[in-house]
Length: 122
Image 1 (cartoon, rainbow, N blue to C red):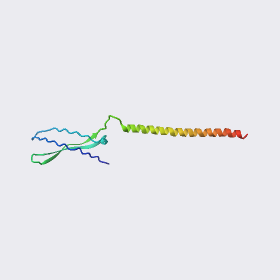
Image 2: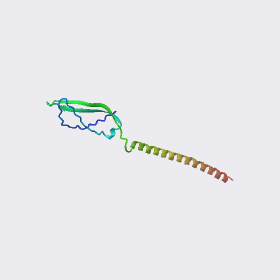
Image 3: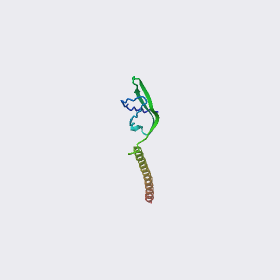
Image 4: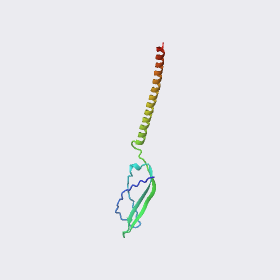
């Protein structure tokens, strides 16, 4: 069981809003590539203060999100799997080739010895 914690730096906006006024904020972030393909809890918290300087904190977003893997480019996991399977197949073929050649070589030497042995007893 492990945790991945990544802190995205805060963005300081010097916007002053009047009472009952709303504003939209644009914030982009890029998570680490190693975290793709997993679910994470994402919390977006805004910190602000009133005219008297009293601080407030408000959670704008606090949900589980899924980070999807990038489908573009080379998938090294599939490439590695293909290379490993090809290596295993080649290793199996070499083992079978050695086993067959050993069995065939043993039969040839036995049949050659029996024909030579029968002719020398005369």
